[in-house]
Each structure stands twice: as C-alpha cells, then as structure tokens.
Image (cartoon, rainbow over all chains, first blue to last red; front, side, top):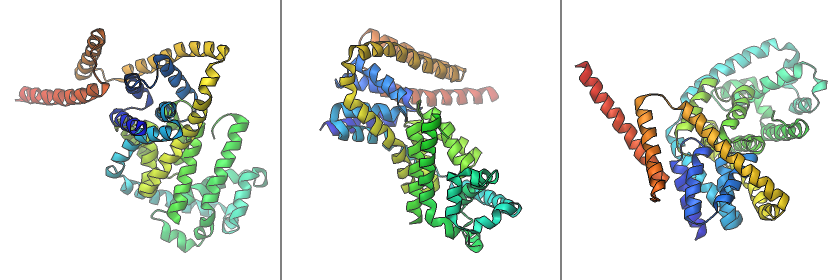
Length: 202
Length: 193
C-alpha cells in the first residue's frame, strides 16, 4: 500500500516539476510533511545528502524518501514515479531526421580524413584488439593514438546510421562490431581508474 | 543483437555519468556534451542544445529527460529505457546504502552537530539557486505579474495556514500565462487597427 502511495505521489511530483531537482524540493517538502514521511529536520538532511552524492538530485531525493518509507522496493518505486514522466515527450519529439543528416556529413568527413591518416590506415584493417591495447598503453602508439582513438570513436558512431552500406563496402567495420560492447566496457573501466586516480571525470 | 549492444553502451555511458557527477542535472550537461558530442560525435552540437532546451521545458528532472532523449534518439524506445536506467541505478544504490546507515551515522553526537551546520548551509544553497533562477526570469510585465501573484498568494496562504498544494500553483500559472498571452495579442491587434 505504501508502495502504491509512494509511486503515485512521486509520479505527480515528476509530472508537475519543470526544471530539475531544485524545483522539486517544494513538492517533496509539502508531501513528506503532509503524509508524515519525514520531519523538517530530516528533510534538510535529505537535501544535504542528495546534493553531496553523485547523480541527479531529483532521483537522489526520491530514493531517499522512498527507502526511508519502504526500504529497497520503496526506493525503486519512488524513483520510477519521478522518472516515468520523462518518457512522455520522448515519442512525440523526434529529431531523428536532422541527426541522420548530421551523421551523413560527419561520416563523409571521417572517411575523408582516413585517407590522410597514412600511419594509422594499415593498422585500422588489422586486429581490433591492438587498438584496444593502445588505449590501455598509450605509449605504444605515440602521438598518433589519441587522434586515432577519436576517429575510431566517431567512426563507430557512424556504423548504425546512413553509412551502413558504405561501411560494409569498406569491409572494416563489420570486423570490429563484435567488440563494440566490450569497448564501451573498457572505456568505463578506464574512466573509473582515471577517476579514482585524478578525482575527476574524463 | 546490434540494438542490444547499443543499449549496453548507452547504459554504461549513463551509468558512468550518473556515478561521477555531483550537483544534479545542470552539472551533468557538460559531461553529457563531452560524451555524446565531442568524444563520440553521436549528436550534433546544435542538436544537443535543442535537447537541453526541450529537457528543461518538459516535466521531470532535467538529467533524466535528457538521458531519455539521447537514448531515444540513439536507439529508439529501448535505448531510452537503457539510458534512463543507467542514469538512475548509481543514485539508487548509493542513496539506498547511505540511508541504511544514516540513522546510525547520525547517532554520533559529532556527526549530529556537523549536520546541524550543514542544514544551515543547505538553506543557503537552495536560496542561492532560487536567486539564480529569479535572475534568469524574463524581465517583462507578464513574468513579473505571475511571479508577484504567486509570491503574494503563497505568503497569504501560509499566514492563514490555508492548505494549498504547489501543484495548483503550477496549473494556475500555466493558465495565467496563456491568458496574459491572449490579452496581449488582442490588445496588440487593437493597437494595429
């Protein structure tokens, strides 16, 4: 019962809040006091915790209130309520057409650039794993590696779009498609290590 | 299968951003721009700006709106789900773990006093955000009228302890905005004639 109540109240909050977490504070304050979920002091603590932990403030606050009332399931339910309204405009506002055009333009430039990258061109046809290794040991590639990595990134981005046929003709991209997810995973781990070492996001 | 891979990538990118960004949606925009525009080139710069504007003017938290939007644009509905879930999961886990230990944590008298200080600071932070937003409001007559009306109403209601939900304020102000626009259009026409 408390789950249903949490979901419904946070769905309302998500639906009627324009402009992010701060605008939500007034609603959550009101509802938490009205339903006796939190005291005023606890609400101030909630804002303090939500602001000083990573992630969107709105989600943090919803999780905090939810878990204080209904444990893990309460946290999930409250967060779901806040998040759900975001899906409403998603289907109606579609700018897919413009993005396709952009992608085509970008692809052309990437393919053009490839011709000038004489040093890297050969390796591009080679083992994709070698490329991955170059991310892990940038010294092995020298100054070329970062630029190459960037190009590879935008190239990977092109794969799904209008360039699919062109890519297939090149016969390169199908080769690296398998390690797509793995690359994202490695990216993630790499950034995690970077974050722990330097204390900032890449 | 290709779609699944794309969803995985979206999930991981959003997970990373959700895990590392402190300070809510607006702080997140810079990281999102870096990931989607500069690093991967999935979204054009102008298109990203459009997305930011749309995310700010649709209901819901900005961070979630833009995550949903980027995910949808990249891989359809399932992409939107993957991106949004990725954005939420770090917060869910972190806050849930904190809330498990929060009461025990607060029972230390040292921590208790620290939080008394932090509570005062939170008031300042929210006030600061309010002032920032106040500055960004357009300085024309309709905005000032709406703002003044809401301020007066909330003041009076709280003085007389009338229970009035904030949701009604938003609904009424939306209607008021439309009304003011219609009045201005009508008077504008009259002036032209």
